[in-house]
Image (cartoon, rainbow, N blue to C red):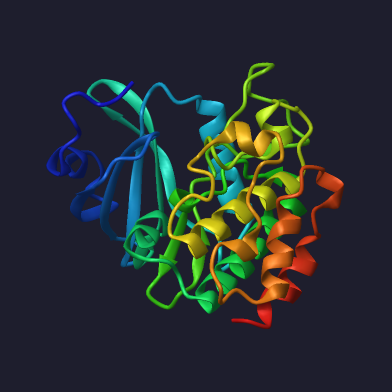
Length: 273
């Protein structure tokens, strides 16, 4: 359940002061309380998340195990994890490298992104999807709120909490779809159990259209996406190179087998970075 009243910095530092200092409360996510602080052992700034007790512990542990196994410049990286008793309740905590930058969704609110920045975002997140799929993992929630844009215009995929591990037993009830409305692939929206990285490619395609348009291309209408009603990328604005427009359109194809491979996406976008 959500911490009520919210956790305070001093309260957390009392419990974890041997590991973390100089805490600042950050806007809370859907899974837990988040703090910016210094990690004593490594002397680096981290984002510390203390998970709410209503989170499925097995899902949280899978997220931690995933971050321990996979390293890449465009994926959030693990620094420390463990358990604490706070308010007489056992909670899992995770500290990840603090990313200097802004959440992509907030950047988009300010203005449309320049084509090279969008191309770099697509390239970086495609690399992250490739790393996940090498472990047979589907992120399932590629959208601007789960991407950080650094001050060097590198995009980093964050929040691996609902990633689907294809080779492990599902933790999702039959008929239930995880993800964010307006970014789900058609097969994801239909709660198809056996997803592939092609579903993440669809979510990335919508995200890139949103970056170019400055707003969601179909106003988060998942019903339009389910029925193949997404817009054509070249209609968003006049300065989009045709190869970029074509590859994004292909990423949004209704049929999974018609969507491009990650290698082809990277090859196309790299030219415009």
